[in-house]
Structures are given as structure tokens and as C-alpha cells.
Image (cartoon, rainbow, N blue to C red):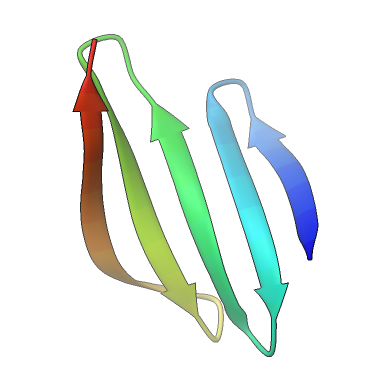
Length: 49
């Protein structure tokens, strides 16, 4: 498992085997995407600020 800061407000959690979670924190809300094989495959709403 590896946690990487991609950009300001954008992080990636690599779980191994090409699967991960990408978290993007915006001014109005935060959103996460499941990653499989380097592709964003599903959006997951994680909250509003």
C-alpha cells in the first residue's frame, strides 16, 4: 500500500495489483475515484465542504 500526493488537493492510494483510490479535494466537495489498471472507473462521493 502506498499513499502519493499527485498535485495540491489530489492524492492517490495504491493498493497493489493495479487497484487504487484517487481522492480529489475541491472547494465545494471532495470526490474519490476507484482506479483499476491506471484507469478511473467509478466515482464515489465522499462529502461536501
